[in-house]
Every structure is written in C-alpha cells, then in structure tokens.
Image (cartoon, rainbow, N blue to C red; front, top):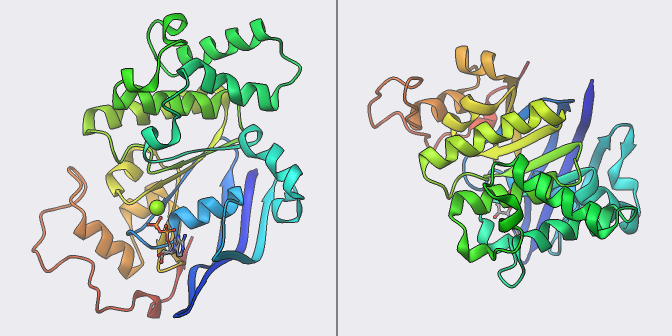
Length: 287
Ligand code: ADP
Ligand code: MG
C-alpha cells in the first residue's frame, strides 16, 4: 500500500530570464514502511520536489500542477492552517546542514519539546519531558537526561544530525523526508546515521523519502529509486533492479561517473556524465 502518491507535480521558478521548470511532471509513490531514494546531480530538482511535498515553496517559485496524495488526501487542496498541522505531525523533514536548522540559542531538549508542544497539546510538561528523553535515547544519544539541557554547539556533527532526527521523529511522523542528511558528515558517521534511520524505520514503520546525489548511499538505504535529471524522472525501479540492470543512459552514466566501492568497476575518465548529451531524448525507464 502507498502512503504517499505524487502525481504529475510541476513546480516552476519565474524570473526575467524566463521559466525554470525545476520539477516538470514528476510522479512517484512511497509505499508504507519503505525507503524511496531520489538521486540525481545537483540542480536536478530533488530538493524542490521535497519542498513541494512540504509546501515550503516561496516566491518566485510556484507549484503549478499535480497532486500530492497522503493516505487519500490531496495535500495541495488543504488550507494553510491544515497544512501546518500536517507538517511535523504527519510529514517531517530533516535537512543537510544541522547547524543551520538547529537554533544555537536553545537547548537540545527545548527544541525537541517544541515539536511536541505544537502537535501534542494533550501532553503535560512531565509527559513531554519523558518523550524528549525517549526520543534522544531512540536516536542513540548517550545520557539523554543530561543532554536535554545541552546547547547544539557542544555536540559533534553526528550528534547534531541525530538531534535533528530526534526532532523529526518526536511526533512519530508517517513520512520522514531527509534531504542529503549525511552529506556533511564523514563516511563512518554517515554510515552510523544511515543505520540509525533503518533501525528507526523498523521500530516505528515510518516511510522515508531520502534525497541524495550519492549512489553509494542509495545502495545502502533504498528500497525504491527515482532518478531525476533536469526536473524529470528518467528512471524508476526497485533498488535491486536499478543496480543490477540500469536501463536509462543517464542512470548508466551516473553509475559510471560516481565511484562506488564494490559496485562501480574502474572506468576511464571519459565515462563521466556528459554535459553535451541531452538525456531527455531517451525514453523514460519506469519499472
Ligand atoms: P537539487 O537536485 O540539487 O536539490 P533543486 O531542487 O534545489 O536541485 O533545484 C532545482 C532547480 O530549481 C535548479 O535549477 C535551481 O536553480 C532552481 N531553484 C531552486 N531554488 C530556487 C529558488 N529559490 N529560486 C530560483 N530557482 C531555484
Ligand atoms: Mg538539493
């Protein structure tokens, strides 16, 4: 069963130079309890797809068409106040740079508590405190009771990203959107954070939309893969199928250009994604 269906989504940016069709007729599904990865080069429209689902697109951008259906409800038809309730409660998002999304002036505990105060008005202070400690514990922060009063700058990059995940998971969202959440981390910490997300998914059943430009990360975490190129989906397949039998020339080029230990054979330098090729001229490979 699908938790979320994105149908024919179009999000455009307007400027004096013209229209930038950042997301141009994008359709994909996120099955319940599964991880879908969007992969593509910088500027291909990954973040704007995520921001469109959250309805965080501002001027000069505009969602020009499509449907975003969460358990039967088209989110694009909700009022602003209804959508505010969906954000954080049903769909939560974590970003690449934890230091810019965490507020340096507030303690870690206070910032997790904020999400609970907003979405769970039925909980009293003590109940919320217990939930914050539980959330810190869930993401593997040691001594969660002491860490409640800690400020973000005292934590390592990996711990900050864990706090971001704790904030996102505090309300037990149905869908967690993670936009390059491990890109700023070193490889070892990145692997730990990916393991953590997998573990949280097993424990809570949350669906994950994971955005990355790194096929190595896709290999580690994805059930389903959506390959984006210049605002379009060029290939869609299960992770297994995609790595075993990449069909679209763009996917093949990506696989060859990004060295992925154990996956990509050593290739000549000519085998990078070629800017002179219009990969949209090849048929889409939707499986
Ligand atoms: P990525 O795949 O790297 O996440 P984005 O989704 O951020 O790519 O961007 C897709 C396209 O939308 C790019 O062409 C980018 O320049 C454009 N874009 C993104 N944000 C804005 C903005 N705030 N104003 C104008 N154009 C934007
Ligand atoms: Mg991005």
